[in-house]
Image (tube, rainbow, N blue to C red):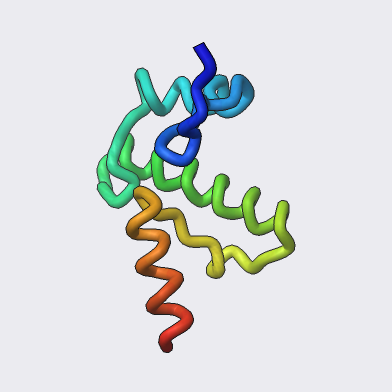
Length: 82
């Protein structure tokens, strides 16, 4: 079968899956929570944000993670409008 709808969903790359597995199985928590698990998740998000900023030459505060395309598009439109 040839799958041509990668706009809807895309297979996770092997390296990404390897890095994400702990957060998808054992170390899942709300990064906004103040308990020990949430603090750990928050640290992981901070690390990812720093890595992305370094990768594209941005400032850390310029990196915003969204939950999906609709949220990202709305954020971009609001940013341009302002």
